[in-house]
Structures are given as structure tokens and as C-alpha cells.
Image (tube, rainbow, N blue to C red; front, side, top):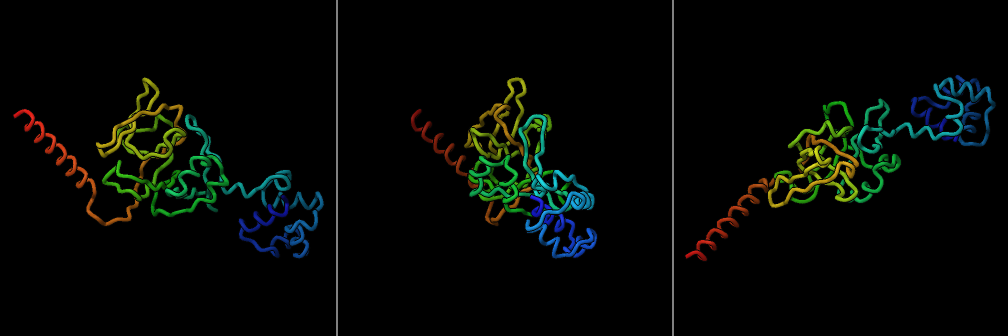
Length: 250
């Protein structure tokens, strides 16, 4: 692990092999052998390396320090959240598209999996932990199928605001984007669609693994909002049923 860690820490610090070798007072070729695992340094050299990178000797030789690029965020109510961070320790915005959804439901607590997700940049976003989710279907019109929801991670159920929209992740229902209402009396969340065609349903708090609050969305269509079309279809259906009822009554 030492060679991998040396190379990782050196590159993270944006220094060349020669700069580090000069500090350690060794030839650059010797440092190269350390990084390739061809040569083992002495204890005194390990101590100098650990002091330079401000890390412990046992971590330097026994832990994969590249895992510092991501971390597990422990929360009070939810499970755990794997996130990845950049060189300034700011969290990336990972993108979970429709193709990755099944894998995400199985691996969202795996830092290795999170690190491999594509990253997107959203300008002037407030500090926090964000993720992008591609949604499918017409249950939340006028936000269309294929749109990407940029959402902020919710660490505690108490932070949920009634009648706001959230990405809710459970093992049973998978990944859904709904309007949420807390039902703390029976430890449930009521999830509703903005498209009235879809009936609301409830999930138990103990089944919820992650909740992400809507911040913004990215749409890839410039067509007329389909909510109008859905409403028109519902009105036409109601008118048709009224006409049928009048016909029966007459």
C-alpha cells in the first residue's frame, strides 16, 4: 500500500517526484522505486514521509489513502451516505441517470460505486451535499420525463417540509420523486404526485434510506408543458362521463 499512497499523496499535493525526493534527501530514482514497490524505506524514512504528508505511519503503509476522496456521512435517522469530494473538500454532484438507477439502489452506500458515477457542475449552488437524479414518467408534470433533479441531501426527517418535493429512496419502491407530507403520528411519509392521475401512497420511516430535497432541475425539452395536455385529457374524460350519465338518466 505504501507505493500507492506515496504516489497518491504526492499527486494530491501537486508536487513532482524531484521535489519530494529533495525534501527526503534521496535520489529521485529511489523515490520512484518506493512508489513502484520495488524498494522498502527504512523506519526513519517512513517517519519523514509521514511528517511531510501529515499522516500516521500505520496509515501510510496499511490503508488506501485514496479513500480520502470520499467519505461516509453518518446521519441521525437515515442510514449512511457515501459522497465524493474534490481537492478543496467540496462535494461533487454525482449524476444518477435512469440506466444507473438499478445499480444505485444496490450500491448507494458503497464509496467505490459513488466515486465512479459521472459528475456534473451546477453554478452558484449553496454549500451542502447534492446529487442529480434523472426522473422518468409523467407523475410530476410539468417536470417532464428525462429531466434531472438537482437535490440536497436531508440528514434528518425533522428537516422535511410538508408539501415540498423530494427524491425518496427505499428498498421497496426504489427511487421516486414525489411531494412529501410527514405523518409522524404513525411514522410514515405520504408521497403524492402532481399529476392527479396517480394515487398517493405512504412509506414507513424505517423503510426510507435516503431523502433528497429538490433544489433545481434541468430539462431537455422546449415543447409545450405536457401538464396542460394532461389536464385537457382529464377534462375531456370528465365531460365524456357527464354526457354518458345524462344519457342514462334521460
